[in-house]
Image (cartoon, rainbow, N blue to C red):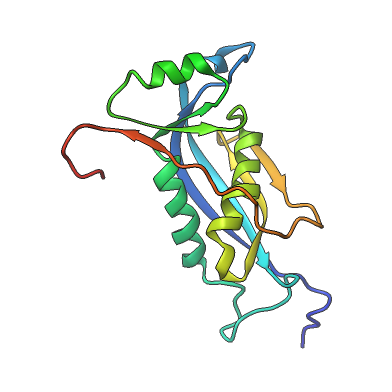
Length: 177
């Protein structure tokens, strides 16, 4: 028999989305608009310490994590441009395009800041009633490079600010796929 006081359990769900961005004030090529096929590895633990499981023996069903987090990513970041709120030039340029979907980030949209935003702002809200806490986000910008944001030991409360919303400008009368 296992000792639940020793073993902490967690789940990792992989999620994928495509998005564009540019890094404001970057010294090289990343200052240009470009895009990535991102991968997010989201690790969750039980909200009461990571040792509890349900009657089936799960922390949570993987499909619920996918539904909530991938749902948010699809609605707000997938096929969108992530633009830093202080990058006035990029914001002005993106508003000239239609149809367009963009998301205004509170920080420069580096992999690090994107991972932190998902961990600190998005995950607490979209997973709030599921009995889990997002402990770590690995945001893969390329197959070789990722940023990792890990929840601090004392950081177990829901973020005070709700996640921002994507802006969609589309005067076409068609159903979005």
